[in-house]
Amino acid sequence: MTEETGRLRLKLEQLVDEFVLAGLAAPEVLAIIEAEIGDMKVLYARDPDPADDPHVVEEPSNDWPGAS
Image 1 (cartoon, rainbow, N blue to C red):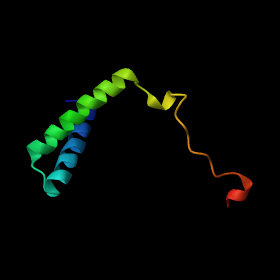
Image 2: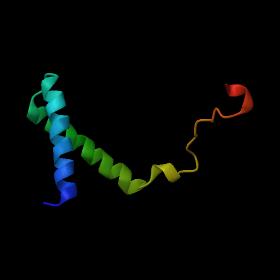
Image 3: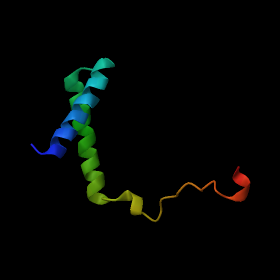
Image 4: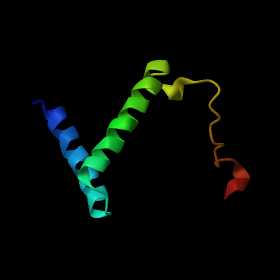
């Protein structure tokens, strides 16, 4: 197991524990995570870096002189 794999596993365990403590069963949480990962795989296959999209509207900055 690589260091990155271990760190990711720890975060996943913490995520599952958070929802188990909120009342869901662990297998239910894992099924939800699996479904979301499947959806994310499809989205990332279509667009691996959505931040590069020119049609994404960015929030205006508040650094103009009258913003304070």
